[in-house]
Amino acid sequence: METLFLILAVVLITFLAIRGVPIFYCAVITSVFVLVTAGMNVLTGMTDTYITAFANFIKSNFFIFVLGAIFGKIVEVSGSATTIADFVVGKLGQKYIIPAIIITGGIMGYGGISVFVCLFTLYPLMFALFEKANISRTLAPGIYTAAAGSFCVWMPGSPSLQLLLPVQAFGTSTFAAAAPGFIVGFIQIVLEILFCTWFVRLTQKKGLGWEGWEELGTPKEAAESDQQHRPSFFIALIPMIILIVALGFLKMNVAVGLTIGIAGALIIYAKYLPWKTNMWSNLQAGFMGGCTALMATCSVVGFGGVVQATPAFQNMIQAVTSMHGNPVIISVITTAVLAGICGSGTGGEGMALPIVNQYFVPMGANVEALTRGIALSTMVFTLPSNSVVNTAITAANSTHRKSYFMIFITVSVMSMISLVLLMIAFAIMGYM
Image 1 (spheres, rainbow, N blue to C red):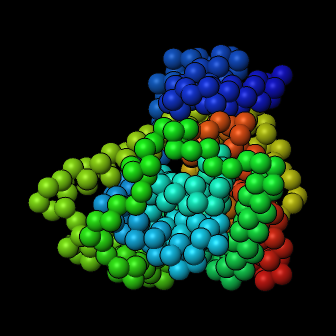
Image 2: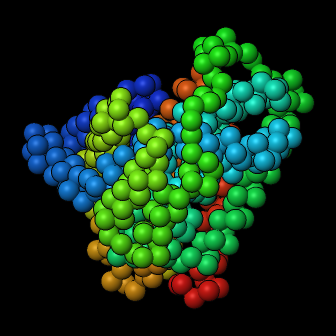
């Protein structure tokens, strides 16, 4: 019965998120539900258990979230994100719109730009191209997540939060298990492009096409690319390369590497930044964006702390840790399930990483394989309650009914396929 209540808690937090309830309130309401159904003291559970997990996550990950968001904001303000999008699409041409969008989003994500910054940078360009190619805006969320929310999140060298968290937890680098990571990552890129191209053509054959700017609620003029003075494509990439080298090759402390990336961006983009007008307000906006993302994740981690304190969860962990399977496989499955429960990849990692460190690393699990596998596993159960899913669908003025299926394929299904291939690659290459 206790396990059933935990399942109902997952259903509840998913239902509330889909209904548009902010994640903090989702987490608090569901935490109270868990405490009541488990027969635990609600006041102690919220003021001690919940807030302790909440605060511990802030202590461990504050600089990752805040510095990463500031870096992404500098890239955005400099016009570099738009430069990258225009360059890639311009080179590939309108005939290859789908590959161009996926490659552009991948470059941005790989360069350390927040998935939310990428979204509001790419969407105007995507909609302009969709109008010319007669592609429905309801497909934008699925194509976008294929671009900026799939392979670039976990592939070697990526400075994404989902990869940086296990890097910090296990003391590895962003290039841990690089060979199998690159091989499987490139396979996923090809699969994403093939599926999205096929699905767009399928919908067009069924008569689904561009709905018009009035349906989007955005004037066409406002959606056209801003032609402000911006850095060239290659200059735009330099700070991103610095960040990848600092975190991946030099294996710097995450906070130090991000600080160096920020300093490099400020110097290299200096002539393109609004120093005399609103530079400080932009930096503050980046800081607040990082804090907002951190608080949202902490809210879910607090819920995870409450769940972990219940007898039912402890029984589940005992059952999992007593399994005789490979510790790497058990670890990635555990993380995937917890990320689905939380509706957040980083929130799921916040719950899973202490468990993995306590139980599975001492069992001899390869920490490089854990780093790569856990980062990938966070996307396997990307449910409708996920914050990125909701933002992408809302920004396209679409609905879950119209857009979620494609997101489910491009993120969840593709990640599941890649995770299976990654485990096979690990076995062949001696990582487990």
